[in-house]
Image (cartoon, rainbow, N blue to C red; front, side):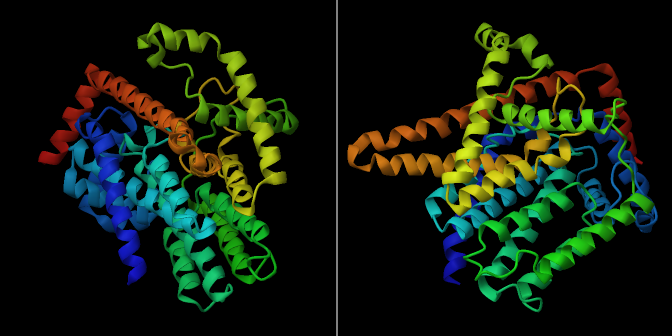
Length: 417
């Protein structure tokens, strides 16, 4: 009970911060063509919900997700604000799970709170995932990812990985119920493997490939096989005709393209057409900036693994593991999807938070100077909000397109039937 009283206020504060920071998204009209297709599909399912168990869906193959969208359609129909409000609630819950996970692993509440705040304000991923009906799927998958990870690690801490503990049974139940056939399945298992490796001593030197992890791996493989046999197949975005070696090299380069984008969120888009001269000047210097950032990222990763504590090593590994499933889908890296940085940004937020508090501790005898390190996370927060608002402005302009307006009208007519 005491633990609940300590954590609930943080949850409420995170929800409030998310809605204050991103309330303007609630007023943006439907603009994404995929959203209209999803709503039309929900309209079909609303007439016969049992179809979701035999209907693969245009974009989603999991009945739990289809049921979620069906409930949303029943409540909101063509009202964009309702869908975005749900996105914001799920995102706030994800930020709270970040707090719980970091607090458990680092046992430093101040670091956990700042990391959760940075994640809540979309530092490193820049808000795109909050803006459409379509992206609720990614938000829900991230939430389930964090829940499974949290309860399995909690089971390790409290019950020595027992298969009969409520923590393990709850985590396994979420894993089975959700049918995690998405790319998050194997990044989740990779994160669990990294945790068991880096916290080997703290776990009582129990084996890394423990029985509970093996069970999840087997379930994940079965899900993967079932998805390939019966589930919806994502369209192939990138096929490399030059062979596996070239594909591997391109995927490797895309890792650092994405990590650069997390810190330096500029890439070819319509936003640059409306950017001020300073942003354009920075964009013209992008090659030099990206080379320096790549060197800095590689250097920090290396020294973090060599000299960092177990938690820092884990979250550096997290950053790479959660990004890997998305690095082989674009050949040039000329445009990358910010939504793929959602879970990856968690590692960046934790590292930024730990570095800020650690530097502040070194300056604690310097009175007001100990607060100087917080300039860095504040700068990233302002950058994240600025980019998010600019993307939202672009979405509003897209929503005024006559073709999009016609789609909105058709969707509204469906709701009136």
